[in-house]
Image (cartoon, rainbow, N blue to C red):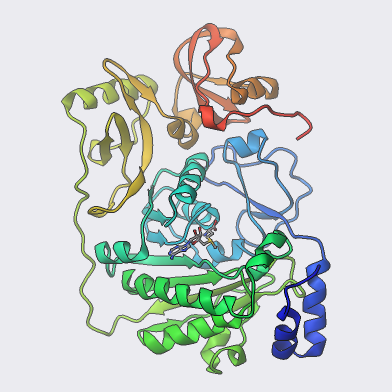
Length: 455
Ligand SMILES: C[S@@+](CC[C@H](N)C(=O)[O-])C[C@H]1O[C@@H](n2cnc3c(N)ncnc32)[C@H](O)[C@@H]1O
């Protein structure tokens, strides 16, 4: 691979000739692919994956998954490069925590954090660019996450609204992307000797806001997919200098994760607590990961807690929802969680704080549309509920699944009636109205595709 001018020399200087030779040779080795399975799903075992080797992080495997399979469309798998999985594993989300994923699109870390939360607690997942936030929101939906609020905000606005609030703040920072060069050679076109410094400036701006949102005793998890010391060890040295209430903590021993290099920062030994994945040492494209605790001995204002001031359903809307929920056995959602945006009903995660004027693009689990005299369930609900908790439902075979994702009606062997949950391999793929022996199609228009059965 032809690396950008000055790149090889920079790393020869940093690593010495011998190590740099191995490092630079790794750019000509094959890309490492991986995926995670989704423990939020009722049947989280993908078809045909008996040959995939575990990566050593929970639910992580080496191998490549296609976007056009039943497993992918039902959110059983999420494609993620093996070293990127270490970030969520280090963050180690636990049920009940309040977590912010600040730079979240397209959603690799978010889906992993949600798996750890197991539906309990709140995941505020944010992306600054609207188009990317829409992709993030789509992945939250496909993964069946019930307790995430998706926002499209700046770090400044979030920090002003939610100071000292989160148990964990994850900053998977925009970076110079040197760990992407193999996978996406176009990433090299942005690179110059000065580019890491430009990225570091932006990372400092993001981190200056991120630190405000970590509650005393909480953690900040910082990661990049670049090897540049300016954005890694030097960024952590800058943070420790400017925010002395933060301290790096040791990382768990995951395969492929090695100690960061204090000499690439300001030589303070603490920097070795951060971790790196190098492609000449491990099966991954490359990452830098650090976990910091915010010590609580300094006087700080306590976490602000207020209920969200969002529009609630009126009596008529509530009655439509109650009728639907009772008819189909959906008993887990508390009325206090319900919010209405236009004619769309959603359930906010329990314990969602006041989000003020933040730009919300998914206020928790989208339940459906309030029509004049009826309620129509949302695609997100079909992907989020445990199929055995809903009736009626119909199990599609692979060919019927193909018709469904293509947007066609599906012929059934048994007659049925009403809003029916279609499943494939035991997981929801969408709702459709059944009339007699025909399942009308409810698969979202924007997601439809023609499957090729060689996938
Ligand atoms: C490395 S990517 C995140 C990948 C994501 N965490 C995942 O696992 O799928 C960094 C993200 O930060 C966003 N970003 C860019 N500039 C930003 C800024 N100034 N503040 C916050 N986020 C920014 C980018 O749009 C991008 O989506």
